Length: 462
Image (cartoon, rainbow, N blue to C red; front, side, top):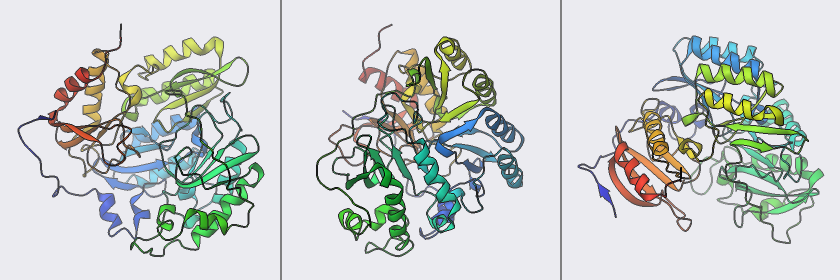
């Protein structure tokens, strides 16, 4: 049944985001993607995206980010690529922000290398007891080579590489241009324009000690076509554009690497909500603690408190995650309960049954001209309502427009903003491969949407 409000909004004439205006016809999209040295304008000010190697950041660096935002900008956010971004950079303050962030040791190794710092690993890499391989050294070598060898700086700032060690805590919902995943301790599967575990997405396997060579052979193969126009009329800047005219098998066959094509491999499913709460490490008597800032926003109090806690319990190390959350690794089991309590007191979500544990949202109309609704504020209201009702909705996404920037793949429940405070509600089944799913509520206020979801989903016992 579709629940309808009193009007239908025409979204076609809504003004575009400044980033889209910069991009123009799509031939210059590099300038639409925020980076450390490319602070892109948006409705709430500039966006400075700080790319972190393997999502790693120190306590002192987190303090520096908090102080930079307080002095020159607005909000600090965790991103869905295990990075941090500063929003609301004030006009004329761009150079000061860049200087402060680089002074904190958060810049690339070489000039021009910021855009290629897109090597994705599990935040539990090296510490997950279920991992088949520790991929941290491999990922570090790959990242160093990308940064130092300037030919790879031509890659799109969105071009990403995933190195999956088979961890039980892993993100398999964010497509990457090239991915490698451990099959066992000796071989890695690989594929293009997708994720480990995608049905039919595995191109082949290579020996573990050939992963780096295979990756760079693929990158060289891609760069030979980068910037050309494919038969669909698209400028080739991502691997999926290359696949329009060339099959994955043909690309693999052209490599000077021994590739195995036989056998069927399927990655095991990761543990749900492994990024939240206390989780055992492979190292004896240690654990990691996962905590989610509601709607991805990190206040100054949260940042400073997180940094102080990291100094005390995790050797000053903090890991950002693709769930827009944080890890504190290498915490002594004897300190875990107290540390989790401190995280909760700072405003982090540390239990998986909270609505905010699985709720994601974009900047919305407060931060983006493409947004039709203030998704951040509405998501906070919705999450608090669902928590008060003891309702658990797994996979809830609020998007201010149809671009769905915050969720690379469709969530089970999507609220699509159509006007301030009003949303269309969609439910998606596993069988539905395209779109947001089935429209079940039209033009609902955020309060009506909350009531609808509370009625739709089972309540969690006290």
